[in-house]
Length: 118
Image (cartoon, rainbow, N blue to C red; front, side):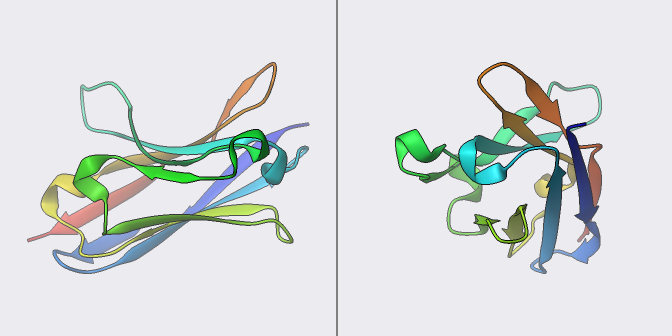
C-alpha cells in the first residue's frame, strides 16, 4: 500500500526555520518526481518546490517567492523527502503537502501546518 506520511512543521518566528519531512512506503521516491505544495485557507493548493524524476535529472525547482530560502532534498537511503524552510515569512504560513506522481497515480501526504509569528 502506498503511503506518504508527513512530519515537522509547527510554529516558527518570522525569520526562523522549519523542516518538513515526507516519508514514503510502498514505492521509491528516487524513481519519481516529488513536489511540495502549500494551501492557504479558502485557496487552492500551489506548488512551492519540487524535484524532477530521474529521467529529468532529479533537478530541484522553486516558486520564485521561496527561492534562496527553501531547499528541497531527497534521502534515497531513507526513502524520504525534505523541505528545509529558512527565513520564514508570515506569508509562508499555510498547510504544506508533499505529492508524488508516478506513471499512473498521484499520492498526497496528509498535510502539515506551518505557522509563522511576526
